[in-house]
Image: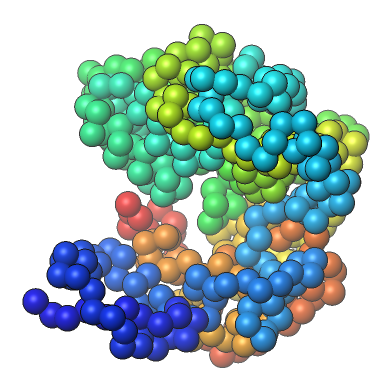
Length: 446
């Protein structure tokens, strides 16, 4: 068996000889990386792949000795930096301690019930159920809903939904994949299936394209074929909301998510969302009918067995809901204007992006995906923190970098970003808007 040694810091990019690992660990490391080969290759070779952030100053961060403008944050509304929200934490801790010591089945601080009620009112949903993270929800709620039936899984859905579908499969559910671009194929697959219960799983705002789903068509299919429509709106909740004549931006008002933004109801629909992005708090929720909520309190293992979020997260979630009611629409208007400036700048350079909505996620693909490593170093050296997206995070033909815009980014930071993108476009073959590329032709990512 080959000897294995411990690597040095990932940021150094060069393995160092260290203590030899036990043979059992060698067996683990000898596994072929398979589809994850590109991600394995980048580890330790791109400066901001798993970096340690030493300091923050607004939306600027320090990694080692280098300051970067942060365009990888998903704290879309800037609540992570809002003193009015963080100031409430000591009061909550004085009352509740640092962390509840029970799983929710055993004991619930009243904070949970209060947040669930406030959240249901904001969403316009019948009921909500709080869990620590969206991953917890996908890994437990999705298998509970599907039982031994069928999961119809959109191929571009977030990786954690695909992981949840694998858990559902292990419990007896059949997993059937489809593409949003081809709903007639989904209809055929629904008609051919004899499995119940049925769950159709999609993203709300997709974490890479920044686009929303064809909700009306999906809901119609779900109703026609007796399926639950399950939507992960991690990136839409807090950013998008109901439309109104007096809205301050096309993102809508109140930030109550993709369902209300697209003027739909919750009939036959389960909405999954979280506070970890727009609200900058460790908390997630399922919006569903009360009967389903009660069902999940017994059948969703992460409700029954997982430890709850810390009190500081419950505090900032509740304070965030109240700050959102008073100031959220102004933050969303700032976010819309800054995102529009980024999209205008990218398009003025003739570059392609899959974003067709104006939502604050802008991915810029490479024409040659093999150049992602030097592109990552280029961005880092010029002071931009973006999210590198290699295969299989996205289809290989969409390999590139993702920009996440927040209300806390300044106009000056936006202009600096656009200058760096222009320099990158001169040096690297970033995909041009005129390139003949159809996202429907992309290979599956899972």
